[in-house]
Image 1 (cartoon, rainbow, N blue to C red):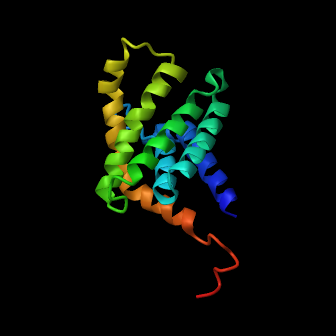
Image 2 (cartoon, rainbow, N blue to C red; image 1 turned 180 degrees about the vertical axis):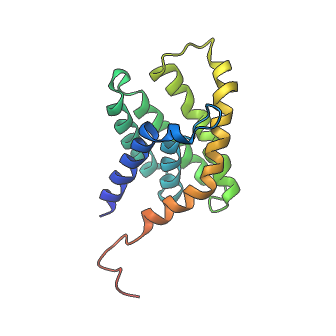
Length: 167
């Protein structure tokens, strides 16, 4: 049952990021739900599992946009690894730490999307970072305050169905 929840979470993050997130945009800045899903799972489960979950979400995002196959998988692995490394160095239950981590991970993931899937250039990236990157990181950080605890709670419910009826 745990694997099904992970696949549903990864698919839902990719689906909402590609289909519905544009409706939540504020001044052209959109939150990064894929990063939030990977960060939420990695904070709960550790770095190795976070990298695998990041690879899964990145692969699903690559399947949505196959012209640059592998770039979003690499970004998911990078975000999962970095969240796993920072997981032990922050107070992971504190909402402020989670918000800062989510915003930083968005800034790490954005060059992969800008230079890879969007076909941007290195000379245009500083303008993109100022115009969209920082706003998107801030927006994602604010959403992390509410979404990361929900993701964590949803993924940990009924881990072992045989033990769920016993107290």
